[in-house]
Each structure stands twice: as structure tokens, then as C-alpha cells.
Image (cartoon, rainbow, N blue to C red; front, side, top):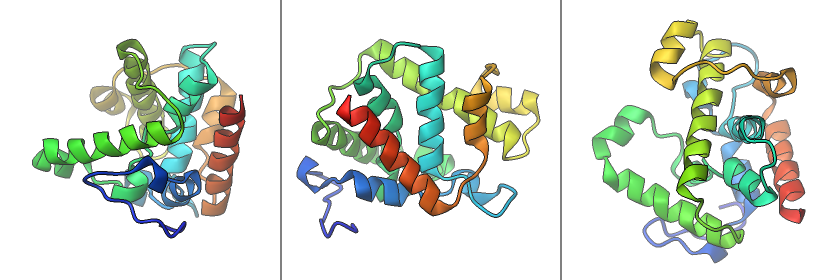
Length: 186
């Protein structure tokens, strides 16, 4: 980690997790294997900001803690990278166990409770809505193809759609940190 900490993937300690490490890593992990047009990749940090914005759109009145849950939903990927879905499926629960332990440590580090089942479903829905928009706008999927993989299309407001323009790495990292700080102080 850039913070100089060592993180044990099998037994992660919340004390070894820093938001700066998360933002740095997620800003450098490309969504869609980097197969998007333009000079910048669409990073997992930017995807996380999009998911948070989609979640707030779908459920106005989310608390700051719920906003943090949305923002941090893919935080384990700063350590394990964006392992593609077929590989995740092949190694099955082994990967899921690592991801669950990391997410639990991240929640403990930032004082978040595990989400209720209803809110966990909202996070998953926001993630899929974001993925649908990314697939069509960034990765060249036809709308019906994106619907087949990610579920039905949701109409999103322009400020949310504006988050789909890929940013330079430093900007994605800074905006992730800024949004985290905004939610954490509330």
C-alpha cells in the first residue's frame, strides 16, 4: 500500500485500510478492461462515484452512511484488482470470501454497519444501472444487449450521466477522495 501498511487478504485488519490507498488503487483499475474510447480509461473510482449518484437518484434521502456504502461498494478491488467475472465464477467462493472479508474490514474502518438486505439490494441495483449506462455509453453495447446482461435501462438525470465522461487518473482519485470526505463529515 502507498500508506506503507501491509494488508492480510485472509484476515484484513481495519487499521491497515486507508481511504487514500482505496482512491489511489481504484483510480488506476480500468472498468471494461480499458476497452473504451478516448484518452482516459473509465476507472473503478469513477464507477463508484457513478454508483453512488445512481443510488441517490433511485432512493432520494439516503443518509451519508448509505452514501458511503454506495461509494465503497467496490473498495476491495483496490487490493485484488478488477478480476473479470469469468475468473470470479471459476474460483467461486474463494474470491467471494476474500472480497467479503475486505469489505467487512473497510466497513469497520469507516464505522459503517453492514447494510440491511433492502439497502444491499439497492446497492446491487445501482451497480447494475450504472453498468448498463457504462456498457451502452462507453463499451459499445447495443441497448438490448446491455439489458440482457445488466437488467432494464433506467432514465438518469444529466448530472448523473455527466459522470460517464472518463477522467484522468488524478482527477478520478481526487474526486473520489473529495466525495468520501464530504460524506464522512456529514
